[in-house]
Structures are given as structure tokens and as C-alpha cells.
View 1 (tube, rainbow, N blue to C red):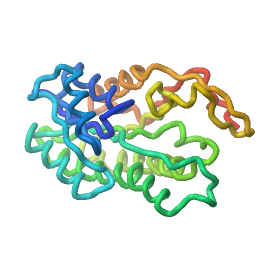
View 2: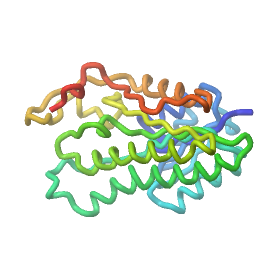
View 3: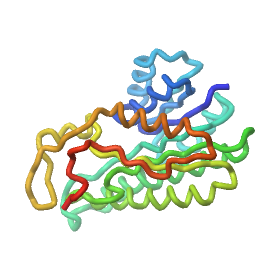
Amino acid sequence: MDKVAIVTGAGSGIGKASALALLEAGYAVVLSARRLEPLEAAIAESGAPASKALAISADVGDRDAVKALFAKTKETFGRLDVVFNNAGTGAPPVPLEDLTYEQWMTVVNANLTGTFLCTQEAIRIMKDQDPMGGRIINNGSISAHAPRPNSAPYTSTKHAVTGLTKSTSLDCRKYDIACSQIDIGNAATPMTERMSGGVPQANGDVVAEPRMDVKHVADAVVYMANLPLDANVQFMTVMATKMPFVGRG
């Protein structure tokens, strides 16, 4: 029986790379994001048959859309073994006092509420299936540990994801559900292209930062997903070796 995974934010970047890696590892994968076209393109790129890959458009901050995503997954594949809560967004890099309420809530809904809603639906499926259990992997980010300048919404939500990861790990032991967090630093994706040209540092300088191949993140996600449920990577940091994180600030 194929293991079944959901990857949110799977239309590009880390989510796409991880979804394709899980497909290559033999999983049936549901790729989800707000726009359907990039998901369908990713599936076409993978060469996976229709029986192994499914694209579903969903905004993770929308409770009804998340419920529909997980219901369709169960209806199609009969079970759920892995969820990679990867979808997220950031706000414009403006001073904290200039952030609008709408900008704040956009990030909270995508990064924190979306992770919560997907976690809740995953638990409901995983605890009732046979065999019981599964694995939830949250994308935490280096910002779950240390902020960049003018990143309060993103940093706050990623710190909160760490708390959600720990609570999920504790509360779901009785269901054989393992919860992990992967904290990623400077994976080479369209979102981080600007880093090659220079980004603001804590001391006010603008410095180009090294990046790493996103494949290393995808490989780490597959490793975590493939562990037996009696073993867990609670937290993993995968980062460009020379990025300014250790000693940041």
C-alpha cells in the first residue's frame, strides 16, 4: 500500500521540490496551493501517473478550503501518512510601527492559522485510520530562532509554529502521530533570489548571502517522512553553511 502525503505551498520552491521528492520516493502525493496551474505543471514535470498525484487548489487560511482538501485526500487515497505544512508568506519589510493590520493578519493566517487548521484535519484522519498514526512536518524557518530586520509578522508566526510543533508532538503521542519541524535557511528558490544581490543585516549593512540547493531540503523532508513512527526528528536545521545565522546580530 502506497503511503500518502499532502504538501501545502507545493506550486514552487521548497514545497514543489519536496512534493516531487516524495513522489520519487514512492508516495502518493496531494499537491496543494492557492493556484492550480503551478501544481498541475509540477505534476507534469514529475511524470507521475494520475493515480499517484493530485492537485488541489486551497488557501490554508480558509477553514472550509482546508476541510475540503483533507476530505478529498481521504476520499481519493483512503488514508493519510504525512503532511508537510509548508505554505507560508511574509509581509513587506517595513518598520514594525508602519505595518498595517491587514499585512499582519495575512501572514498570521497563512503561516500560523493555516498550519493549525491543516494539523487539526490531519489528526482527525490519522487517529481514526488503520493502521493508526502518521507524521506532521512543519516548516519553521531560521526565523523561528532569530529575526531579520523588519520581519515581525514572519518571525512571530514562525516562533509560534515551534510552539504548535511541540504541542502537537505531546498531544498526539497517544495516536501514534509524530510531529517534526524543519528550519530552513537560504534555500535557493525564487523567494530567496534577492539574497544574491544583498539583503539588510542587523547592523544596517546590505550583504549578499550564500544559498544552498533546495534539493537538500527536499531530501531532508523525505528522510523525516520515511522514519518509522517510533522515531522522530523533533527539530532539524538545514541551512547554507556560510549564511549569517550562527552569530547573527
